[in-house]
Image (cartoon, rainbow, N blue to C red; front, side, top):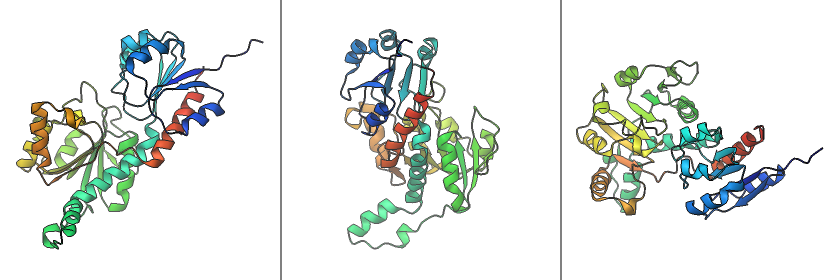
Length: 315
């Protein structure tokens, strides 16, 4: 019987060190090149069966054309917006990601940002450090009995809904691709119902041509009540100019942003710089640097999920 050749994998990004022993346990061959550049990937990828990436590499038709043996791409994370999905489909390359690995991290971070916003924790902490003891100016708002609308009810959205159970919230969820679902954590509703009832709106949708800039002035105008907005999905989904206007006219009472349209803050164009300066001047906005899904635990768990999924492939 002919000996089966072990699969060979190119790892083209920095990964948690647990990945390498997990690969070795399966008897798979790999080259770990975390600093490899896109041009070098195109030169070297021709001999690999698999490619493991995080987010720095753009996987387009040109790169795939240089990879005749490629059978799978494994994305260490959830989002797939840096991958040409149609080109991957046409090549019949299996595409894997690991939203199960960081869904709890995203959920906890989402709730943490909302609680910090409601209770003015950033402001209060800064003031106390300056010996300012302003109790009335830091009076909080309770999450209890708020109506939370979750848009996008996949791994992340459903994990947020589960975390909200202890707060006595009414959770409404809308998902275009799963419009009707049965779940004890949220009620399946139309988008219109969220527009009518929500006090808080949390976004958990992928970045696609359809969702890019989807949250704009027209969408904000559809909400019947002022809302709090949370975005731990992708920054390009929300028009920051529209958000600033909605914050100024109190259609949006506050925002929690883990992601931005352009996260390379030292390379903003003049328009982006102006918008950023306007946004950071608003005290009812809190930020984090795209770390919602990036805990110590999720970094490890993502690897475990990917290895499990690769092992199930018929390679």
